[in-house]
Length: 241
Image 1 (tube, rainbow, N blue to C red):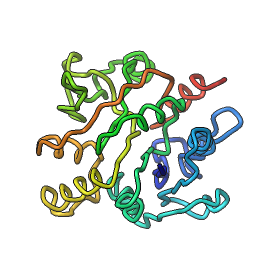
Image 2 (cartoon, rainbow, N blue to C red):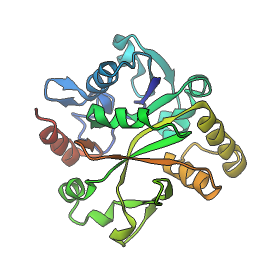
Image 3 (cartoon, helix red, strand yellow):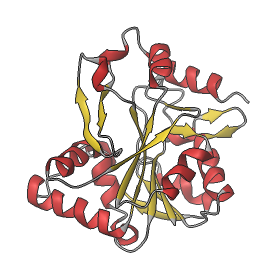
């Protein structure tokens, strides 16, 4: 098992004082987010870790890890960044994590236990977090529907119906080489390899539409993400211990 952390972004919605470094360098307690993510992977025996860098890529040299660089980070999105790690994804089972989120190690352990081609973590306690982040949680929350066998039937769409949200996508998932092959095939066939601005949920939904099975892996521990300064204040409180 290997891990790929997507850390290309700057965090343009943060104040200038916090966006002078990559977003994964935000401090939570006495450590930055990226240090904490690496510690989680190491703790469960994942020592082969790669970073997909972009903004201020030289800042990541101190980690002594494999890097894939997205030189077009300003005008591209997560799918483009992930594709930079193709040489790993087509050969190895890989945990994929956004670099602006934090969670407990159980989130990764749960993914490792699942053996489907693509597995996606979802937060079952999302309402509590979203109420802290937004006046109206439905302003930002997206659909996450699953069937009786815990396969995703819908993901990443806007909704005004809270019953269509069984959890929230976290930005944490696992691919095996067969799953990545299916993902790449979808990019070519359905998106004509025009994926600069695609979100991962865009491609996951298209795969689902094509009858590709994607496993939903439940997680009910602590986690949060950072989009703006309010989020940063929230994540520091959640992980203050």
